[in-house]
Length: 410
Image (cartoon, rainbow, N blue to C red; front, side, top):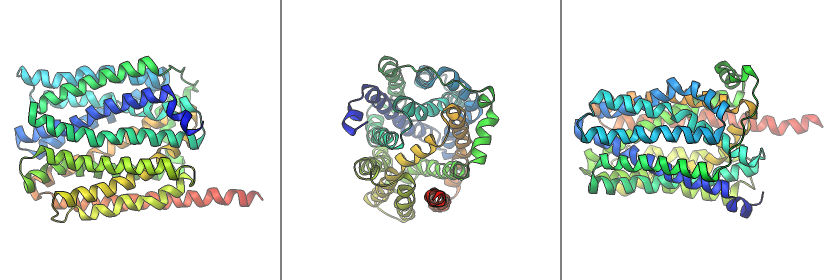
């Protein structure tokens, strides 16, 4: 499929719009909910535990969700998950306004939201090759478009949330997120065709099949752990940003929004460069090995006493590096898995991510309360350097193996 045809595909356009709308709301919640907990309780630990509860739900109920994905297919799974997340999100502001939102109730709602996230994220990865087929170039270009669309929400979501929090309050912003889930359901149900799920052997539906595949694949075995730990460090960083802003710049949710948005701007720039110049010139392994350093190096500037513009510039530069490598990264990880195994393996990988990700939250909250932001920011840069270094090493090894195979065949 040529690029103009890809850009005119109604199925992909509907998915792009649905993802943009839904993820914009989620990014608003990512700022509004922690800000609400932090300001009302004054506790970074409580804030981090609310976020950890959502990830715990994702981890504990994610694997059963993989069976749902295998039986329903990607399109129907996305509809079911968003249909359940909308009322759960709506419950937070309604309970707050009626006096029923205690801290345990908030933890329970966050847990419920997380339980529908793993199959939804896995369905996002599965649905693109379902629609376009298995050609790496087309899937990579489609992933670049999806990455650009969703990363645009890192710009619009936090900035809009910062403005709306000041205008209507953090709890009211959560109403908007509930509405975005409804909008996504309507778009996916109306414009994305339902495909029958691929027939699976009974053993392919078992949890151990996903674990076994990840453990045996030399690339995915390292990448799954490295990216899980790396994302845990990113989560710790995003938790630290509101605390950093309160400590250095005062009560300014707009500043938090702009710092979050800086990463989104950079990621969109990186996605655009990847789509326009890289995907048809370089293979995915070369792109990852060559450009991941652009994501990592700027992170070492964040612990310095920079002004807002300096912090935003470092985050922007890291976002560009992230946008350059992510389309190829997701394509490699998706197409490397046989299609009948994808629902099980993708969900298993998501659950592994959810098990590792709360480490960033559970460590960051107490450290922020006790020592401030500097140890968290230094730890963030250190973990990113180590994990992305390991991911680059195994990627380079796999690239060498693939290039050596034709020579050995001759």
